[in-house]
Amino acid sequence: MFDNKVVLTGVKPTGTPHLGNYLGAIKPAIELGKKVDKHYMFIADYHAINAEKDPLVLNQKLKEIACVYLAFGLDSNHSIFYRQSDIPEIHEITTILYAYTPKGFMNKAHAYKAAVDKNREIGKPDDDGINMGLYTYPTLMATDILAFNSDIVPVGKDQVQHVEIARDIAGAINAHYNKELLHLPTYHLAENVAVVPGIDGRKMSKSYGNVIPLFEDDKAIKKAIFSIKTDSRPMEEPKDPEGILVYEIYKSIATPEQLQEMGDGLRQGKLGYGHIKNMLLDAVINTVKDAREKYDYYMAHFDEVDAMLQQGATKARPVAIETLNRLKEAVFGR
Ligand code: TRP
Image (cartoon, rainbow, N blue to C red; front, side, top):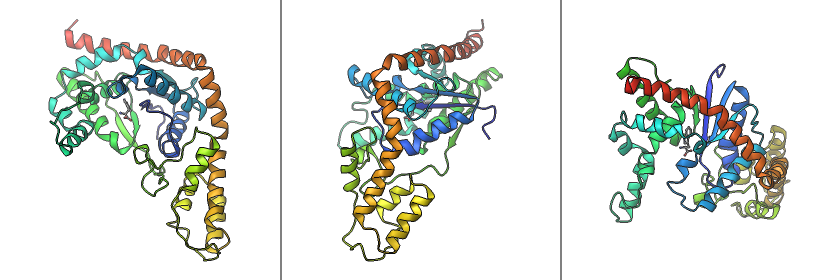
């Protein structure tokens, strides 16, 4: 299905990921990257400055996210791995796209709408604290996608609208010049990607404070796992594993055999909540053991990572330059 397709994945640097991020986004992106011939994988640092104004924090987050992807097996010899801010042509292309972006698209984009709704909730003026970067975010994202002739953009549900906007802008430009100047992308919503519940049963999310961390020490992981909600039924009482939160989280990382073992133990009243939490703890620690070592290595040798990112930019940039030249020729008639 992805044969000969150009796949582009973007990620915002938002700090070290948790188990839900890993299973829901990082792992599928890395696996997909291995399957296709051409995979662009970039860190959207220009997007990040809309919210993060402290360069030290931003730089730290960028390092963390880059090292996390490499630690989990992103192959920078195969995937073209780069920083958005190393491709300056992105901004020239974006300016051209602006001329074809109806302002109404931006008004309707959900990141902006969510910010307005939040302001209304707390009785502030609609646009309070909203910068132009946030407002025009979908056009910049359209460039991220269109500059590299992407066919497929794997996204979560919240980003579908943005890919559709990219498609609409590209369509408008192509229609105006009656020429396929920009390649129309499609989004790909990964199926059966785990939505991992957090330790309180809601979706695992940093904003809920219910995450299982991955890159902290074992103690922190243990603390999170041992605070997963359970009830007071005794061990001996046979239990249906379905709906037991520890089991639900285990589903997302255990092998079928491991899952069977936990399920049987619960049904037969042979495993208590302490046991199953320890089983989950082992599985989580096993999942991240190698990655954590690699992560520590890359964090301590960031110059190597930096070299990979620069090499990626060297490969990506000529493609963006070509797209820009194509557009300039059409737009300026020269
Ligand atoms: N908006 C995406 C997010 O918040 C990040 C992103 C920026 C992106 N540009 C992109 C994703 C281009 C895919 C393609 O997660």
